[in-house]
Length: 96
Image (cartoon, rainbow, N blue to C red):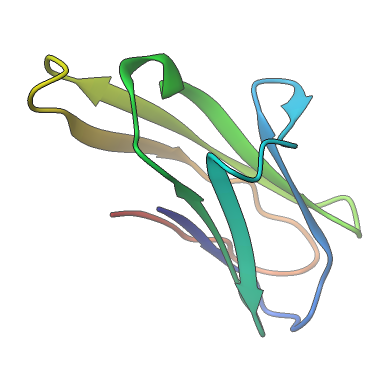
């Protein structure tokens, strides 16, 4: 799961994998509660590795790189973070 927290509550967020907006809601589940915005990757596979970003309605964005390691029998997930700061405040990423 990716998690990004901003200082303003209830902002509209759009999630992207690479430059393409995520539309596959069976594999990816975006949720938000107040100032927290989450993206869950269901049944993560090696092909899911790549750059993810969230873009908020005020033009602020944050991104993280998902690295998936291992064979199909035992995957591990790591996310390296790149934080973009803007007028809304600090964005934090968490992978889980």
